[in-house]
Length: 408
Image (cartoon, rainbow, N blue to C red; front, side, top):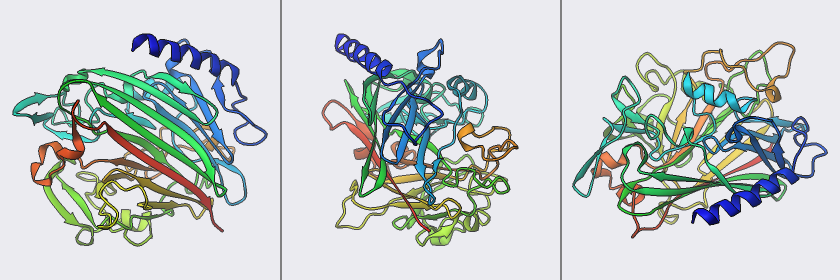
């Protein structure tokens, strides 16, 4: 297995060197993907780029994360619609300071685990409590998948695959191999990004619930006077319910209707700002905004893991960029970036004026396709089928597609 991996990596490195590109020329006059030769001493913070007509995505092995995503606005201009940093080393510094999880794969168990404790097959496990002064576990513990150095196992013009071996890391039971594959394509002149996280347990039963932690700004900070997503429109046509949480954003066990809580009803398309200003306490005490797990109640004819339906639509009236999300997951965690405070400058690809633009409060929205938060500690929800895996089960798969278009 390890020899096979080494061979693939060596082939990938040779291919990378053959596909170099000019990082400043993102979409125009560029007919190939490639690696940004950044001369970093740590190769895990180098950038890898893939592309198809009208779309270009860039990644790094540190956290198997998406760092840049360029699609065209209504005027045909390329816009970078994800939040991050210009330099790879900045992501490591972010982990050591504010820990934003920009664009990373989070796991082995995304979101929160109450008291860092769970039980499988009558055995109790404890994982690091890394949030709220040791109250609960967030995104896999002190050193989650977002901080691991993934290996590039496959790389070509339109796709890249990263691999991570997790041998009981952070106290989770069992060993797991995970592959994170990203691909881009164009269908009917619409660019599409797909993400596929496949986790294969190698021994005993273990909880697995991964997610992509992508920060979106479809307006791409083109309006320096209003660098927020408050005027962007969001719809969640199949999210009639959400998971109720306590002050630490850990589930209470209750499932409620969105119509009964101000600021959470996106069944009909609505400007984010309209709901956010009503969502008092929606992201914790003394906080106005969203950090909410919306349940995806697909129609009966669809099936619980169907990828046929558009489950979320986000669009920017400023750029005319529209994004439609499909996923096999049963929940979407939506975070309205209420914690951003204007201290992080946006990337050079998102600077549109003479003055530096910073990531302000509500300057982005995080969309995390995942399973029900802390489902392993709420047996009444019957979620173990989708969250506990072993050698006698199918692999855990998190699939999502993001299709882009423009409107006038």
